[in-house]
Amino acid sequence: MARGTPERRTISIHCAGCRTLLYRYRKGGSGGLIKCFVERIVEDRTAGDLTCPKCGALFARPGEIAGRPIHKIVQGKVFTRGMRRK
Ligand SMILES: [Zn+2]
Image 1: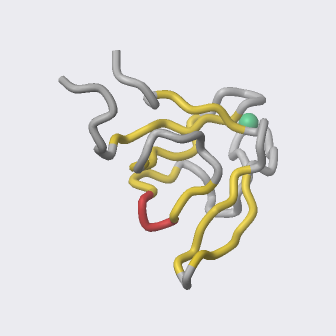
Image 2: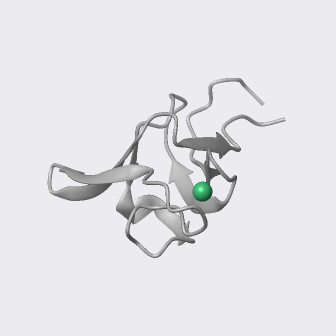
């Protein structure tokens, strides 16, 4: 497999405080996670209020880009798994 092949992969987004799974998300590109397009969230384990269902930490803020709703990630509040292939 060539490195740097553009592809989408599904990553897991977890609360940085208590490690609870928040979203499974289909991410494009290889950069860091700054925002989530709502339409690419494939599994939502939250109550939809952008807070961790376990510890209540606010991990994102609502926004939009070109009319598409996004969640802007609050840096340091989440960590991701699955960004790189083994
Ligand atoms: Zn939490």
